[in-house]
Amino acid sequence: MSTTTTVSPKWKRKLHEIIYEADTPEGKLFDVILLILILFSVILVMLESVESLDNKYHNFFDQAEWAITILFSIEYFLRIITINKPSRYIFSFYGIIDLLSTVPKYLSFFLTGYHALVAVRALRLLRVFRILKVTRYLGEARGLSSALKASRAKIAVFLFAVIILSFIMGTLMYLVEGAESGFTSIPVSVYWCIVTLTTVGFGDIAPITPFGQLIATFIMVMGYGIIAVPTGIVTAEYSNTSKPKTPINTQSCANCNESKHSDAAKFCHQCGYHLHEK
Image (cartoon, rainbow, N blue to C red):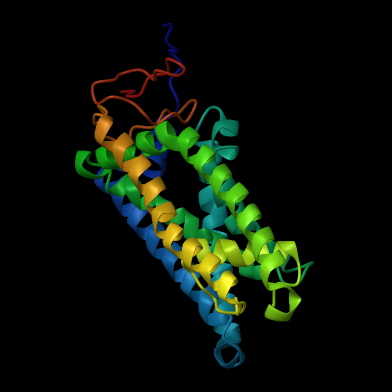
């Protein structure tokens, strides 16, 4: 693997370490402050949706939200300028979430109803895993992720079978019960079947004929088994998946933004860029 020898300015490297990594006291402090701001912002959006509170504290909510939005805008800009390939951040999961959590407030100048979208900032709380990035948490998270990926084909087949079953049983209930019992169409009957299979039971539609109630009983009992199957599939895969050897650091490449590096790594395994420049 060829390595890149270009050295970034010291201030840029330091800023990148603080913003993207959490292995240093400064990086952890930055992430903690960021999480507090995100929580505060989400709480503001929730409180602002309460009409009585908004009427009383509207100016405070608006000013506080603008202050947070400006801070997040500055953070977004700094994240872009501290890596050599900004597109790797801009089009990453967190990059898109960061943008979506900042834009709505600016859109409120031109459009109404978009302000509530800042609640998407709650997704940014996922950054807490960077602060808690130790073997106990990260290893288990990676193990669960691997189990979910390994079982996705089985779960997809299972869900497809459940959809077919719901369509068949819903159609049968439509024929047995009819519109007088609330089963006005096949889609409505399929909706009732799914609600019953998942043991939600809204109660807005219910069978009244003995045969319909017998079918409903069968669907209810079957629902318990259906709930257990995906859990069993994932559990089996999780048991069979050995814990991956995961890095217990938050090293992030200042060139391509790759973050999954082993503890002893000196160069990025993605692009060969120096991880530690002196």
